[in-house]
Length: 259
Image 1 (spheres, one colour):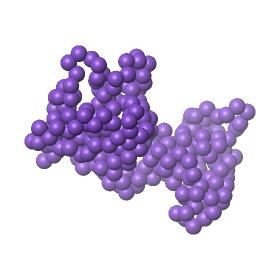
Image 2: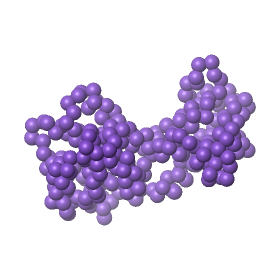
Image 3: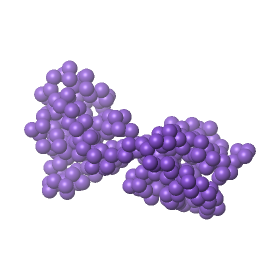
């Protein structure tokens, strides 16, 4: 049975990081120390690859690399097998910033300047919410593997594309699915090159095939299907979405479905 909370620390202050680590290790029967990072990008990669249950995130990594708010935004816009519980630690008193933190998916915020704040307070909060994170102390279902998740996303996109009327006979059909899955993993640029390398095609031919599949759909599909199943606004004076608009629309559908 999974009865320990695996915790990642993202903190640039070595004293704060050491104190949080010590508090985690002081509860070995309930908490497991996943590691620490001063770099938001490395923390993002760690979360993708290791699925920690919880993250303690310093918002302003002034002595590190990156930005905690950017990390929150990337996680919010990435399909993950399991979303971590995120505690934000910050010295920033701005209400606007703290509101943005909530909007971008933080579960709880501690202000380092507030009365009674200490690393022990943060860890005690984690201990309080731990049963809910772990499914009331019962072993949660194993998160799907990356391959399982991508298979589910692919099947979902196939169903959505078929509703819209994207013809499977167009080679761009498969490329658009690949691009939407890449975007759901927060790869928002260079789809043509990545997909071309996978299928042994040139970047230009992949980009052309994706846009052709979209144009063909809008030329040949029932207008009722288009207006029912593609609800994103089109650019001014345009009848057909661009590849980027189309892929980002289905990226958001994937995030809504699988997060």
